[in-house]
Length: 90
Image 1 (cartoon, rainbow, N blue to C red):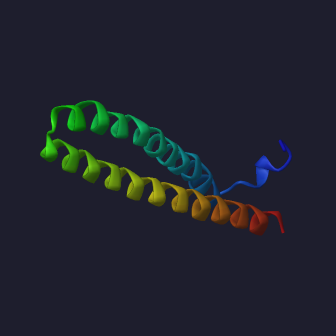
Image 2 (image 1 turned 90 degrees about the horizontal axis):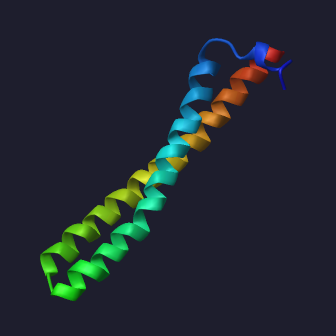
C-alpha cells in the first residue's frame, strides 16, 4: 500500500480526503436518527405536542437527505480518487 501512495498526486489527493469526510457526514446523520425518534416518543407523544413531533420529523427528513448526500458523495469521491490514482499509475 505504501508503494501506491506515491501515485496520489494532484486532484487525487483532494478526492481521497473528501471521501472519508463525506462518509463521516453519512454516519453521523444515520446515528442521529434513533435519537430524534426517541425524542418524538419521549417528548412529543408523551406530552401530546404535535408541533414538536412535526418539527422533529422534518429534522429526521433533513438528516436522511444529508445522509444520502454524504453516502453518494463518498462513493463518487472515492471512485474518482482511485481513477485518478490509476491514471497516475499508468
